[in-house]
Every structure is written in C-alpha cells, then in structure tokens.
Image (cartoon, rainbow, N blue to C red; front, side, top):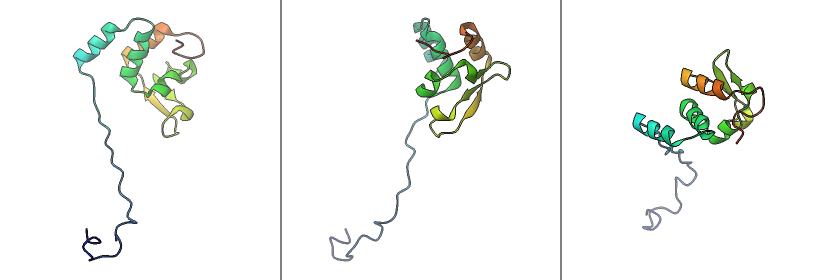
Length: 115
C-alpha cells in the first residue's frame, strides 16, 4: 500500500523469506475406530493394518519392509534410508501386538507384505 500511496518506491521486505508453516495435523484413531477398522479387515490385509497402526510407517516404508528389516531378537524394525522420507535409516521398537502379528505371518525371506 505504501507504493500505491507514493510513500515508497520498492517493497522493503521483498527479499525476506517467509518461514515455512507446518500445517499438517496429527490425529490418532480412538479405540472404537481402531476396533471397527480391524473388524472390517480380513487376511491378508489385517496384518498390514495392524503393522501400520502399531508402527506408524509411511506407506512406502511399510510396503518396502523385508524380513531382514525385522529383528525379533531385539524387538525392532529397521527403516532403510532409501525408503525414509528424510533419507536416514532408523530403528523402531515393536510392541507385543506387532511382534505376535508378524511372527504369525513370518516366512524365511523376502518382502513382509507380498500382496
């Protein structure tokens, strides 16, 4: 408006970079929503949904899981750097529900979720 009114010739803040906003929302399912979701899931989708609920992976991280990434001895799952959003690998602890779910579908090698 200062330019329009003749009080300035250029915008003095044109070179100032605006801070990025984090406008993502964080939402968790209620226990009732989780129960309804799991009741609607049949095999082979059910283990995928349980894993997603208990580990919080992005879809690409979830679908890229191999049995080499799952460490039952240490109780953790490794996200390889090439599938992580920030390009850094990380290890996520497994709870009892996730451990028993994955042990029930465990095979020797390859992708955890095949279909």
